[in-house]
Length: 141
Image (cartoon, rainbow, N blue to C red):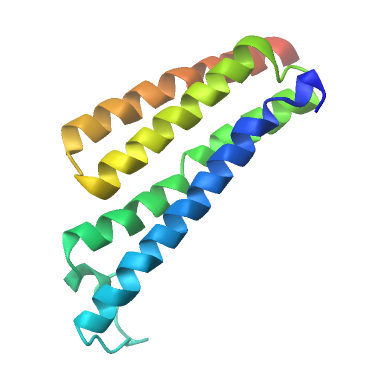
């Protein structure tokens, strides 16, 4: 991989982590649905049926949804930096830092869901994301 494209490693890493969370979500959700003998109702408002599942099961789905939200900004920034030839050095370290913090956030939410700790890690994950954003702005301006 060219040095300026190294930032695609964290992109692939976070995408892979998202797939791990997707698997974890269904490995816990399907048995819980079966144990509850839940009949899927297409007319039920979104989320109503899943809300009846145990919290420990819902946490995985909540985290998977979170991985489809803010990380989209990360993906756009990292790919942009790679295309600009700025996907190495500090930007690469910031990208891996972001991915690491998102994995930690996932584990906290999926295992214990300690909201104060989860929020702290979420805030910390914004530091490399903001820094990457500023670096990208400085490159294109």
